[in-house]
Image: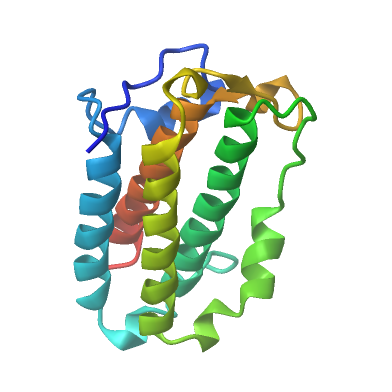
Length: 175
């Protein structure tokens, strides 16, 4: 599979470092996206059904809500990568993750439906990054303010690291 070098500081906002540093510096981000999804799916399927709607504290998301948030975030960031890769000059607006989670009704969904959607989005994300022109990977796009500017390749690493971050949270605080 295509190799995409890890982005350098300056290609992404400082907050994204917490996600990007969770990934190896081997350029195999597309392999990691697929392998990490498969491992996540296996991990999540092993969680007892009653734990999937558990919240470790008032106001915190359930495991199902976290999973749908990961899917939403990936879909939004892949769209950002497409726009950045195509040279979009208009800045992108952000999104209110709490409002998205509240509107998702994730706890009413079956785990299978969440995993099916996640897999579909993941395959589309991998196809997008696998087929972008090489020159577009280091193109910087503009989000809502300079604090969210990022290169196309940084967005790929953000997607993968964001997923890993939330899986760590589930392991540490929910199980």
